[in-house]
Image (cartoon, rainbow, N blue to C red; front, side, top):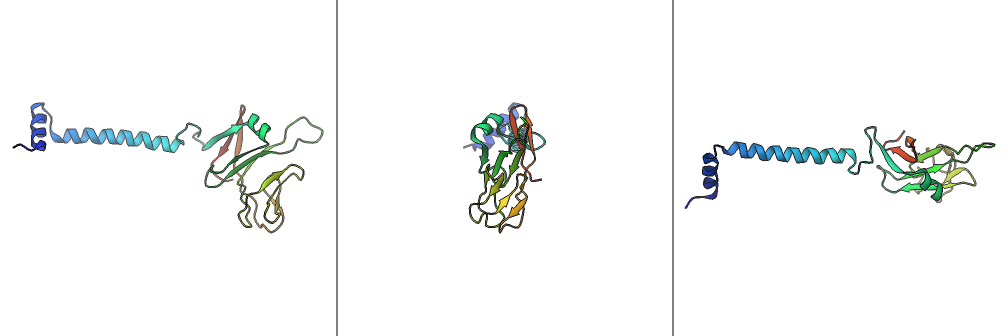
Length: 162
């Protein structure tokens, strides 16, 4: 009885090939698939990430409709994007802000309050201005902010803190 591996080797020798070329061919295919998979992981898989590390998180239209854009799993922390109030005596819209809405006091999620022009923590009423700077309350640190860009109608946020 001839073992299948011996039979396979004989077939390869009849074809003028040896076992190592079969292995190296398999290795090349594996590395090609591995490299493609790794590239997709590094790009974010969905094509929403640019080489600068920015991700498309929504549109200006969506922000106008909802008043905010919230992503629970944006980077290593949640993301909250809001538009500040209009400038006085101007038709110009307010600036966009992207923050991690985690309060430094007890890790509660802050909300934007249009009436007070500030982020407010519902747990102990810490307040932060539109730039994330701590204004009052038991929190001791500013909110972490993300770099943000508008490209056409799309809002792009970098996956790293400023």
